[in-house]
Length: 88
Ligand SMILES: [Zn+2]
Image (cartoon, rainbow, N blue to C red; front, top):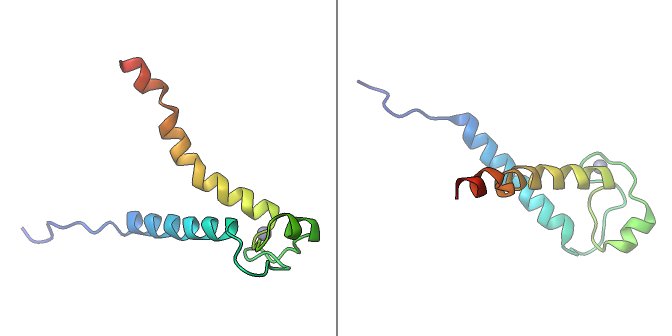
């Protein structure tokens, strides 16, 4: 039988996307030179107050929180662990 290997491109795409998100999230938190005046994602103007509060900010508030939700949702779900603790 040929084709014993199933290449699941979808999974790889998901991994790539989450790595990219993780890099963006880390970058968005690190003071990395000048902040942007416009959001890297959606090009919304980033308010001065936000740029002062977060040196090197690159995302607007809504993109930042979307990114953080995407990052924390899967881990938060796994770590909630209510089922695991019931097994013990
Ligand atoms: Zn944005």
